[in-house]
Image 1 (cartoon, helix red, strand yellow):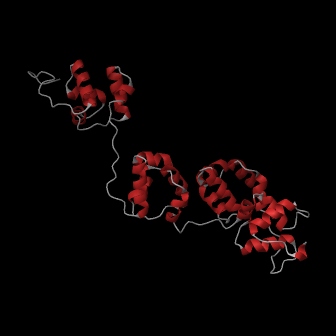
Image 2 (cartoon, helix red, strand yellow; image 1 turned 180 degrees about the horizontal axis):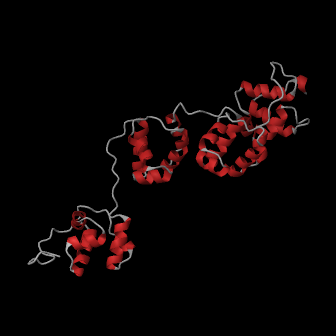
Length: 310
């Protein structure tokens, strides 16, 4: 109860916010002192006082619910009076990566929270990229960051950590390619096929062999929305060794591909054909390959078939 002789509503500090004005107006309608109002809202009296004067503008979900029930007003009306708290990052970018992110974020008029949301990462991760001391980013952040900043990944590739490992097998490279094409993380792919993120990483790096695990390959292909035949072909073990003077068409093409340091996956991309086709020709499984496909492969390898192989 208010002290005797004091009229509620007199001698009050002016409100600085709409939320404070609203709370004070409702309190005076109920004829309550701040202590009684705070108790009904489930708040400390000093906290309520700061909220009413506008020196504090944040309300928790529970407090909003309590206020809504007490004054019989929709929660949305109360939330609309709560100003958005600006997220201020103290400090300036210390790296070229951070300066690029800040400049581009400013050009796009993105707040730090909006940048983090578009990247699909916690706010602290986006903050570390912009004003942290680390001058590089991990590979899995390359495409989300490029997409959020509306930049081609090629402009950010120089900032990717050199410690990022690259796939050591055609199968691993193909899986990573299709996963990143879908903007899918290793964790998300692992969730779809019942594996951990670390397990997917080992598959992509070629440290887990899938050549005999046909069911797992089928699961990965389904999760990536691609033809399982392509991945099965990449898991085929080679049954021959490439000599310096290969006497077969497959051996010749393989030697030329290795000379150019191309993987089977990269050659298939350049020749605009399937992985299974490349593998079949190289191991001699395809006895009479399509001349048009052979010509595409030769064009991609920038070579011609030696006379002795005609």
